[in-house]
Length: 231
Image 1: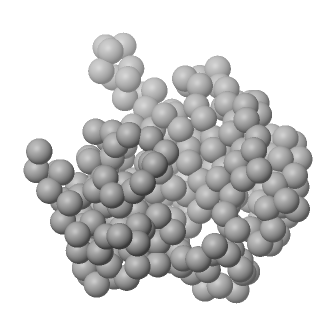
Image 2: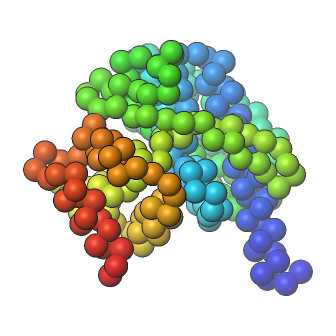
């Protein structure tokens, strides 16, 4: 098989396995109750824009009302998770995060990251989560299909909120950022901005965003981010 076709086959196989795993994790958390899985990172970009991307890991938020009570439940439950063709190995556990190595004989190793976020209420919140430390996170449900036509339904943060998140990150206004801005961040923001959205919704999301610095205005952050896209 030519290298290009082999790479495409590996990409499709990896994506199918990722979707199956994310769906299995979601079902496992749903069975526990009182928590909500929200897909973030590059898979959220793909779901929001419809552009299939290369993924090295699976990033998620898990909204809960009590970190100390819920994380042990999830760690125990995920430890018993059985997905054909995959093995999960707990790599790291902190007060608000679980990271797993995802091992498969058919694809390259992946990473599954569960970042826990405390919300005042999870069930019955109609898709918007009010964080205990301030901020509002609106979410939407988006369907997708694997290569065999199997449909999955995942919750992601809304397009305006995700644009706000990437704009804040790319703008450089955040003090003590967790990491440096990557080229992929710029590419993801370009993709997000190609979608349909209202600027007022992006600015509203920024005003309620936990990463939004007090010293900058919404328009300043947005303009600084979009200026960086022109470099």
